[in-house]
Every structure is written in structure tokens, then in C-alpha cells.
Length: 328
Image: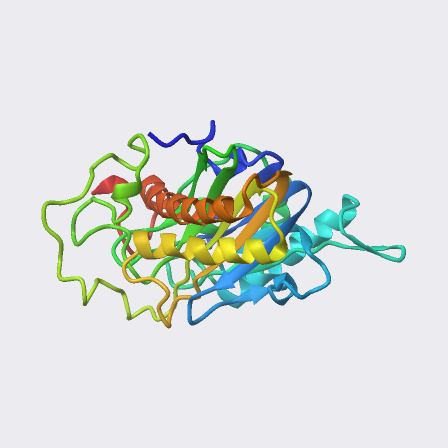
């Protein structure tokens, strides 16, 4: 049986904390991953409709290799302002990249589309800067899953989505964790059942323990909600393994296999599917070739589990356009 970290959350990677803030009236929110110290990061985008901030900075040829925080947010383009709230709060706390006598917090972010999920979007002022700052203030090793943070207003093809997380400790001693806001055009469950596409990777009944069905639907035309035309699943894969920025990018790329294992379909033209990767660098690689291979495989598997846990944990809110897994 695979060994998860003590919390089965991305924060099993020591030195990382996650904070969530939600606005249940708007049905949206923001999620922040912050480190006790700056951490190395990479990113890979697979979807056709991404919305991002400072992702160009994460390329392996760029000057700044470490970031202060990563932000996932609802709100489509409006939600990019969540990272501004995080950056302001970090600067006030004395965090940031030093340039002369100035501190510039490095806060890449990504957004998902949750503007037609039944919430009141007639806000008098963009709420995301406030939500970003509140999420940072709430950062902790323990945090809730489901309808919280960036997962507050998420949907999938058939069910409400949410925020998910999972972890694993590898035989090498490295910990890998995933954090994901599941807002997919595709479905996390198989046909009309309660069973998850990610079932082969489940650990200790963490999302219901239902296994796989006896038969499967025709796979070439999976269920979608094309009428919405905008979605996006955004996530973070983190490890304590000592990785370069280029290796983090490769880790993020491998983790996208977790989307494909847990969501059908994934990486569509209407999804902005994206994964950040973060390395605290606390545990050196014993065998760089073998360890990076196992880390990438673990990243995909942990991400698939986190996606199913997000949908499994979602609970109903008034005005939801879709049911929750818990109510089926």
C-alpha cells in the first residue's frame, strides 16, 4: 500500500502552507501556496484557454528561479488580481526579491472560469485582490477540501467540482503532493455512476473506495458541458526533492498525465489546464535519473487522486447548477 504523508495533503511537503478564502455569495474564491522560504518553481500549460500571471518568469532560461507564493483563483481574467493581494501582503511582511532597497514578491498565478455557476457576479468592486490577501492570511499546514478557495465555484461536466489535495512518500524518502482546483469541461466520474476514473490509484478509500464499474461507456464521445464554453483545471505539484527550475518544469509536465487519468476529456480547447511545480529543495536526489523518473510518475498519480478527492469532498450550495457527488 502506498504511504501518504500524515495529512494526505500537499502540505506534507515540509515548509509549505496553503490558505483559502471564499465568497459564497459570488461563489468563487482564491487559494495560495506559500513557503516558509522562497522555493523553486516551474509551470506547464496544456489547455487551450489559459489565464496566467508571471508564468514566463518560470522558464528555465529566466533570471529569477524562485518564487514567494503560487496563486490559484476563480474569476476568469478578473481573478488574476488575487495574486496582487498576495504580493501586497507579502511585501508588507518583508518578503520579496530584493532590488536595491525594494522588495518585489514573485507571485505567479493562474485562473479558472467560474462566472456562470449560479453566484452573484454583479460585484461593485473586483473582489479577488481581497480574496488573495485573505487566503494568504489563512495559510496553514491543514486546510479543507471541496467547496473552498479556488474550488468554491468549480464545476465539471456532470457534478460540482472543488479543491483537492493528496500526497505520497516515495521509497527514496521524497514527498510529493498535489493541490488542484477541479473546474473541468470533462467528467471525473464514469458515465452516470459515482465511480471515479481515478479509482485505480485510490489509497485507503480516500474518495469512497467504490472501485471501477463492470462496464464502461463508449470512450470516443465523453460527456461534456459544451454549452458553457469555458472551464479550466489548475493545480500545483510540490516536492521536497532538490530540483532545478528545468526539472520542476518537467515535473509539471509529467503531472498533466494525472489530469488525463482522472478527467475525461482533459486539455480541451475550452480548458486552460495548467500545472505549477514547486520544489523546496530540502532532500537531495540520490540518483538523479531514477529519482526524477519516479517523481514524475508519482506526480501524475498523486494529481489524479487529488482530482477525485476534490469532487468527492464537494458539498451543495444554494443555486448550484449541478449536483454534488455527496448527494448522489
